[in-house]
Length: 163
Length: 204
Image (cartoon, rainbow over all chains, first blue to last red; front, side, top):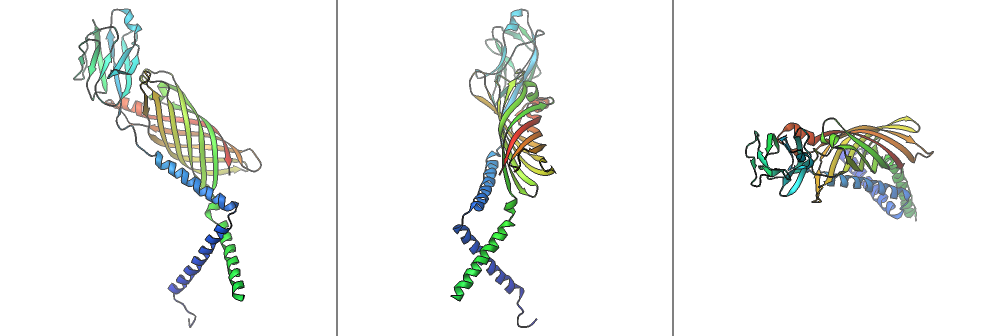
């Protein structure tokens, strides 16, 4: 020890001061001489920043209220012409699903929608009766469709008979 | 005069010091590359992406930053198209297009002077757009999921600037398509996609 002894904090504050000076000089030097290396460095940082900004704008959650209506069943028909026309799921006059029934009369219809009631719809043939375990389904007044209530996304119509 | 000389000496040494410091800076190891690519994507297993569509084909661009040692970050954007194979269970919808971002962390292994392998782990986002066949607008679906895979990289010039990249990845597709029947919900919401592509990479 002796006269030259300095406390740790003194040494620290001195070195901090020196660092500050060096840092300042480095900055001023960078401003005066802008060479290729600096441009390249800037470009790298910029590209990193761009990547991250795209990442954060991309992270959003969707599909919160989308459903697939899924209706399957079997239709008993007598006229072979019935197979020529497609059958539909319709929501507010907009078709969401289309298919042709198989020769056996069985069918699967699936289509996207967000909310509300929808219909299982035939084109030229009227429905006499149907059976299902799902409550709330009923034949429409024109007999061309079966109305499926709000909230029902999966229905099986075991036996649809035509007039 | 003596003071001025001393000051300028200090300035020169300081600037030299800062230069030397800069050479050891971590940013010196940061390498940036971009790679335009083409990809083919096929869904595996029992889900609507597999049964409704043939396969997805697309093109896009990727960017990679080697951040620390052999580790880095990357992103790939791909625009996919697909043909409908069996639309019955898809809905009254036309052929879809998909915007896909793959975000990932990679680690690069040097096998020989001009052959590298990269292992990849990341997260993907998907947005699939299909037009309603009655022209009443588009139906959007898709969300996100993990992805992992590997890339084989061949250097094709002396300077190492140009490379050919072959990549194979598994992407997990998740969306939230609701249905009362859990099997059907899963059928429309979950898929595993095998993703194969070739890219031309430029390092700078």
